[in-house]
Amino acid sequence: MNWIAYALISVLLFSVMTLIFKKATVMKLDSSIILMFVFLFGFLFYFAHNVITKKEMFPSWIAILILLVAAALSYGGNLFSVKALAEAPNPGFSEAIGASRLIIISLVAVVLFGSQMTAWNIFGIVLTVAGLVLLTVKF
Image 1 (cartoon, helix red, strand yellow):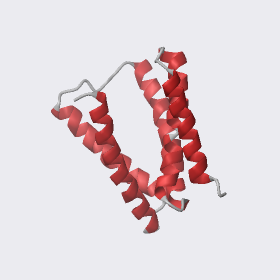
Image 2: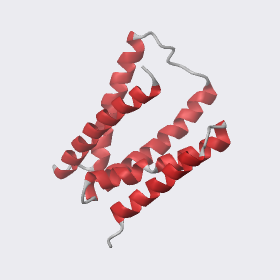
Image 3: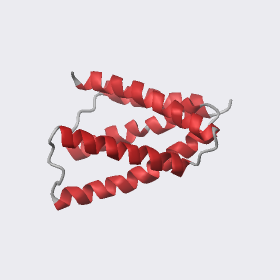
């Protein structure tokens, strides 16, 4: 499979997960409880996956430090994401705002990784911003 197929599968899985998160918040589960169980079960799934596929599970100390920072960012990002999902009038609206991270990622990736950025890509970013305005601003 190529990266587009992986991304499309991810869209489907994350869409169902988001709807489950919304249902959990409607059931009055706190965001931190939802995420605690999701990450606990996720840890168990990844641990089993890595044992079964015989992956090296202990990277270098610098990699562990980088992953620790990523985990702290994930903690905050996921917590606020589920809180937004709980309060949004439509779960798709809060997810659209969250997905706008593609703007930051795309622009910073040009500087950090030398990723490509064409005029069409910039136009897509402009359309994304326009879509966010249409979803969130009351006219």
